[in-house]
Length: 328
Image (cartoon, rainbow, N blue to C red; front, side, top):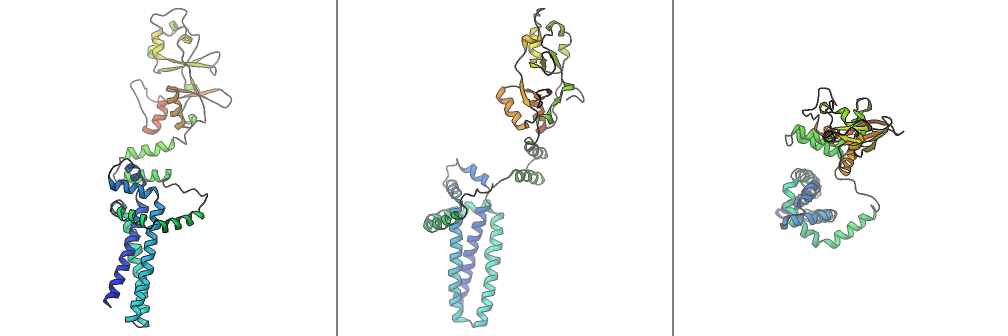
């Protein structure tokens, strides 16, 4: 009877260890593994190797779990038959089944999931050795499993929605600040916002005809709040380029009567109204500029968008000493 009890306890404990290890390995944050790839400690290298072929490790643990359950149940059955009658065997079977479900599945898997970051490093050595020793068996089983998933792409471990939810969860738990969580939400909105949503519309744009003499703007120029001014040709929709306020001021000293705005014009960046905000950032970087002219489908100028407009979508309204109330 003593041997029967010891065997039952051993079966339950072994199964619990395997179940807990399986749940912990599956719950361990993949971001932690990415951070360990450049580590030189043995444990970290071991963890990286395990997660480089996680299906192999999981298959090994599942095999060990099933072997312990099957072999243990057979041994318990043979021992029970020698010391118990048919009624006792039936009761023992029911109790063993209940114990395996509760103490070898539900509790250890829940524990493993909640304590994955603590458990995985501790079981990594045993998991690695078990994977190596049982490689032939696990390789055959994973190869068979791959036959049923051939051509299928694994689902993404992390989605945009999960990252947003993690930011909100981190804010509620005090891990990150409220403004940091808000910035995470806003960053993901950049792919949903277009140049049309961000632009200053054409009726609010300051522009100068290219043939305007520099001398004629000497007085109003210092009071202009914009650092970049649109330069046009025959019409507003005929945008030649952009004039920097600093270039205009330099052109005034000394000012030639024949010099015009055209003499200081710089090339303009033109974008379609449907360009996404995250693509705008890339375009600003590539062209090394802070302003783009927004064009409609029929090639008309409908507004301008700046790098500051995009940045404000993430960080909120940014004002400097030249901004006026209610000014874009």
